[in-house]
Image 1: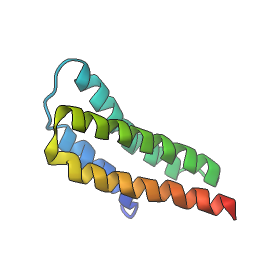
Image 2: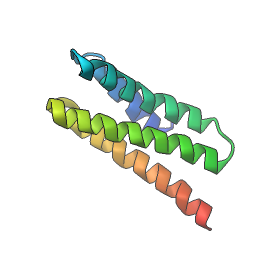
Image 3: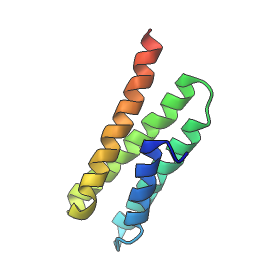
Image 4: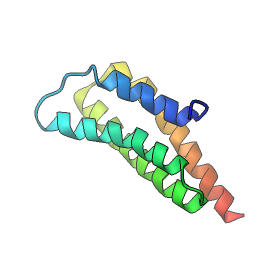
Length: 103
């Protein structure tokens, strides 16, 4: 998995997010969304069918969007750039699997 760029970005984000101190309802939601990104990318990479891989990668992309929204709400500028890079990478990954299925 060390050559899976999107997964590596997700791990980097997860490590950075562990250092962020939140409280209340934001903490649980933020932690779960960030964790979901790496876990779904990992699980998806183990799937043999493109359809299954795409499904897990799209779930990861949804969690990235959720994380981006929380970053905006909480004004967490220090991780915005990395999260945007991760979102772009995950989007391209999902799109490539959709495009392959259309052939």
